Length: 121
Image (cartoon, rainbow, N blue to C red; front, top):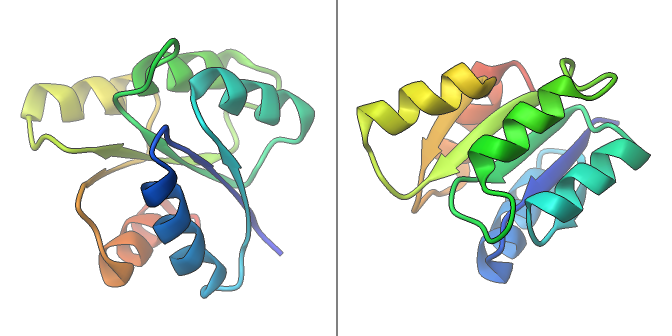
């Protein structure tokens, strides 16, 4: 069973994403911020990660860069989650190491499609 980590400071986003991903038959874990997300990855590297852009302490860009520098950190497929359709931010996320970019708000088909395009489902 695939393991997906959701890294977002919004409990609502984590709850919705968890429900949608579990419906796809994946095991889901959560982290409230980038720092907790990196600790979770150091403990058990997931197959895929949904990471929010704007978080306290360690934002999504820094999270992805630090993830990719970790042992085994090149393997997870990363879907970057943002509330802004800014081309520069998309490019920055992809340059940091994200595999796909998704905008809030999202629904089940959008989430599934983003994970499929990233090669995570």
